[in-house]
Image (cartoon, rainbow, N blue to C red; front, side):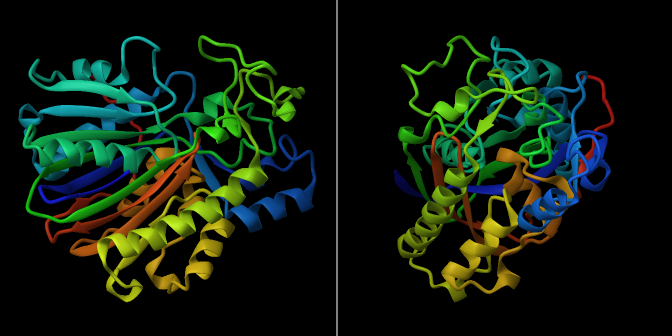
Length: 355
């Protein structure tokens, strides 16, 4: 699906991460079983050094609440001006009700502010922006709060050396408002890859070999059971390399821009080597494609793109954003960020009470 919009802009972004920081070097004994080569190889390929993870008392909505409060303060925005809350996550506090409704309560929003969840993974920020921009384009709303992020560490055994170091936790809050700005989106889905990145048995269905021919999923051990995240790392890498590369080329054609006319290429920060490979394949100047988020936060899922924007601390620029994630779901967007666009440094969770 592709679309262009003329009535929306990103006004500001805030990101909140949990207060527990883990350095991968401290995991040599318990996670990597003193395998120094494995640890060094993971650091070299993924770019991982630190990550922040949520304990059992910190939920996705807890992080969303603090990110939202910080966002409103940063922008001096009256929450009563919100028309909508879109909450993109795959680690909800509850299966029922939605995180968006729970956050609605905690922020003490008015009944006229509608709220709903979207189940998307690493491409979730692009999907959330697409939905928000669509509502603003039709003038059905003026201000939308987009929440994106997860606490994926809770789906992984902390001693799983292949997965635990890769994923960090974090949630972003983005205010999207009416404005005369041009943007372009191209989004894609392919359900054939549904079982390449999956949490098999944690919801209301049980995955079995009648639903998936991927036998590797069912190979459990002391560090992974069927309630934990499964990822076919090699397949995900290859698909992301191919499809993000292609998606960015198609976006350049769609928005009728050359690579030189785009200020930044912002790619989902899932793996440092993967991002470098896409940059090299496309012939993009590395100074226009920041690739450092993994070293401080690991893979933040749908929160990685907004977190990258926060760490850049820039305004008055254009960018192509791109991401690939579970589903498969992927896409790219060309967006203008005006001189009033604001971000703040990524904040550490403090445990603020409800508004």
